[in-house]
Length: 78
Image (tube, rainbow, N blue to C red; front, top):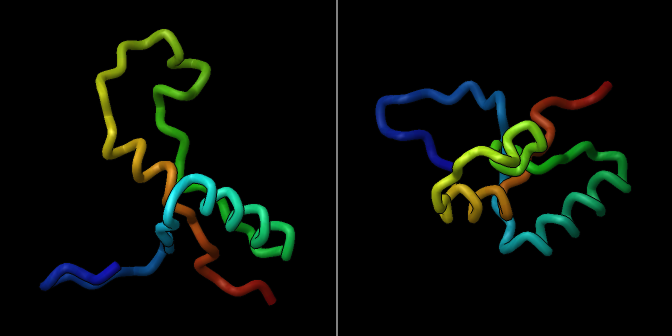
């Protein structure tokens, strides 16, 4: 991700996009098995049990991102 013109990132939350959900899940398994803590960026709110009966519109962009985006460590363990 590039910083937009006129901005400066604090690099707090580092993420990468994978090709699809299968590649994401494979990456998560391999990195976590190797001791590198990675995780999906978030669960969409309409998929959480507390909101299962709530109205939800079509959100294909959010679903596309959730299927591919992974948080990676932003610091080094010593």
